[in-house]
Image (cartoon, rainbow, N blue to C red; front, side, top):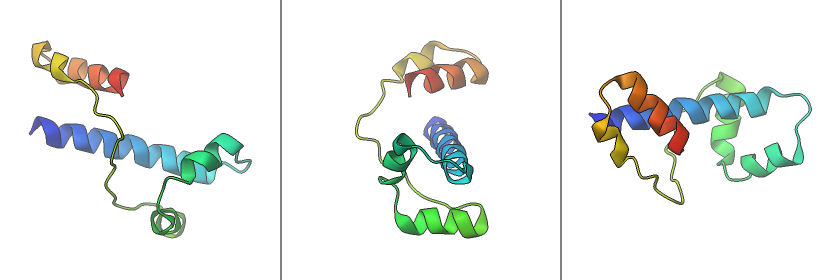
Length: 84
């Protein structure tokens, strides 16, 4: 259950980042470099439909073991956000 919540958190965060990058009129070199790691089919679907489902594979795995000591969902969410 915890992994599912983490996956959804990461998915939503990346979706917002992609939408922000795609909707910015003046794209920077850094923004284009980030988009080069995203499959073109996903970029096209977001541009046409406003959303897309996708999996994210991170090159490194964050140590999130500290969440076991936290009580509330908000504390855990903040902890995960700060580690990623």
